[in-house]
Amino acid sequence: MDETKPIQPLDFEEPIFEMRAKIAELEDLSRRTGMDLNGQMQPLKDKLNQLTAQIFDGLSAWDRVKLARHPARPYTTDYVDHVFDSFSELFGDRLFSDDPAMMGGLARLDGRSVMLLGHRKGRDTKEKIACNFGCAHPEGYRKAKRLMKLAEKFGIPIITLINTPGAYPGIGAEERGQAYAIAENLMLMAGLRVPILSVVIGEGGSGGALGIGVADRVLILEHAYYSVISPEGCAAILWKSSEKAGEAAEALKITARHLKELEIVDEVIPEPMGGAHRHPHAMAETLKDVLTRELDALCERSVDELLEGRYEKFRRMGTLFGDEPPRMPEEPASPEGEKASAAEAPSEGATDPELQED
Image (cartoon, one colour):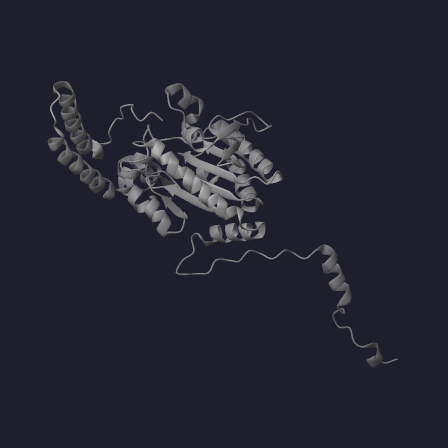
């Protein structure tokens, strides 16, 4: 996360960059000539702050999708380096191979051991191709499953960082059971007897995101998005054209604010002014504070409370007009108990022997 590296502006950021360029010219002139130009620069800096706040307060859903996909946005690997005290990566699904698009391993957060899972996108072209641009294969989700079961075995909380356009859609992935691998993860996470905390840090695309997103608390960064389908995919289905992606993004209600209103996520984590890619170190500090606070709260709850809350949280999604979600089912009676009850109950048509005729 290099804050000094030039960042290509997005279309709606151009007025901000023009004003920054003017301020940079004045600062350069002041250094070269020794002139005191603070009187000219301070009003421009104040205006820059006001303009930045105004533009980012009025971003459309499509603008926020662009921010979530920004190539300079902090990735899972960046947060590993700046949020966690240590990280030991673990590899392989023990069935086929290792998938670099899904990273995971043991980490330390503020002195607490956690199992960290997250999507890896890659920065340069070589890394992006190796990681399928963050689209995990079945072996990636099976690796995640193996590590989550390991965390449960040793009573270690789980943190997942979600940032993927979706699961890899290739023929090979489908042949190796992509849908089944994701479904197994959903079932496993619903019943894991350890705290689970998930954060959408960029893109949250469809089942590829949900495959590591069934958690006690689901958080999202301010300019990230979480959706059942990409805006382009939705536009291609409804309007037969990806040019309607902006309209689709609005209709899908995929921004952090909409997701919080719909109770899909539990909390929106604010980003520094201008987005996480502008001040990645500040974003990392904020994320660390939130993760520490949330884990402290989750670890105080009993396993039964976690499981019941997790079950009701996801069953509540999609309810209409205030309908109450189904409660967590009671434990089924044992077969032995059922047999005993059947033996104790009189058979149909049976009568008291004393009332029967000789």
